[in-house]
Amino acid sequence: MIKKILIANRGEIALRIIRACKELGISTVAVYSEPDIHSLHVQFADEAICIGRAPSSESYLKIDRIISAAEISDVDAIHPGYGFLAENAHFAEICASANIKFIGPSVSAIKMMGDKNSARDAARRAGVPISPGSDGIVENETEALKIARKIGFPVMIKAVAGGGGRGMRIARNDGSLVQGYHQAKTEAENAFGNGAVYIEKFIENPRHIEFQMFGDQHGRIVHLGERDCSLQRRNQKIIEECPSPMMTQDLREKMGAASVKLCEMVGYENAGTIEYLVDEKGNFYFMEMNTRIQVEHPVTEEVYGCDLVKQQIQVAAGEHLSDYVVNAKPRLHAIECRINAEDPERNFQPCPGTIEAYYAPGGRGIRIDSHAYAGYPIPPHYDSMIAKIIATASTRQAAINRMNRALGEYLLEGIKTTIPLQRSIMRDVEFRRGNYHTGFLERFLEHGVPELKD
Image (cartoon, rainbow, N blue to C red; front, side, top):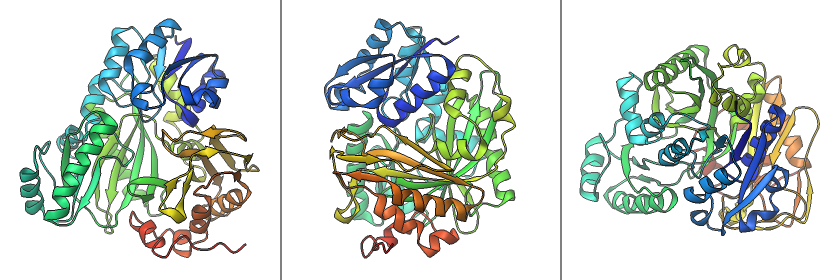
């Protein structure tokens, strides 16, 4: 039985976990850096412990301080959320050695599937299609050039650890490969403490489709359909939806079966996401697995009528997968917009500062996951996402219209946000038809953010 959980994260995901714990009757402990003392997750947790200064390397990535906080507060488990230490196998091992339950997959699964290179190898052995690429870690630029010339440009250089678009570069020739190789390694080392990279063939303008997976400690593994995450900038997702407008029932069954088979092979438990690239002909290729809860998990929750965070906690406590997850069926359509404190008109420059006025939209079918409020000082040290709007309706068109309405109601004064961009996308003819891919946003912004005319 889990009676007390420490949340090793910040912002909206920490608040999301606290809410799930409260509904389950579980006590919570928040950890925070010095500038996050005003964050809502600190205010709403039952206890809160400061673990360091502003840089994440001095706070949210400090395993010893987080474990010390967990031991001092006598918790049963730690929920890592997403980002920071969520896919860190060493952190999961330390939790186990301290007799603290890590709410996530096993250490072996994190090591195998959290490392993108070994995950590709596992997918290959499971018979899941993968794109051409290096057989392992690429040790130097000479080896990188050899591999790229063999599989043909363009190629993608990718960090084996982490996510969120960091440690990734597209190379279209020898020069950009050498430059991108070193940039990706440096960025990955700074973000994840692991600068190892591999190379794979870059598929032009694919759809980015991910499958939500869930397994328990008793060998039961299911998928809860797909999410379309193709609307992204520099590999950072901006808008997600469920189900995907390009998906057919036949393709869903094939991709779902492949995903379950892969998870069964590695003995996966708890929440995870398998990500694919799908080309124009409907061929799909394994890209990576995220061994954690995803930012965009709410769209699956709204469409399938389940609570994935609660289920994470219950599975970690040894319970079987709930019937409402095992037998979940898609019933609606949901779209999520990530609201970032960035200025799209200035190349998405981050806009930290104080929110002077705040009003969140509401009404039927609108969900807001956010830690923002009037007077909240957005720190410059972390990811710029301050909220997620999830619009749910009976059809995709109704969900788009509902999202457009909600974005128009959202009041965030004192900072710049991505709301104007997302409103313009909601009104775009091609997006409304479902005709988009990973290169959509770059073309959409060729002449700046389209002017809104209400």
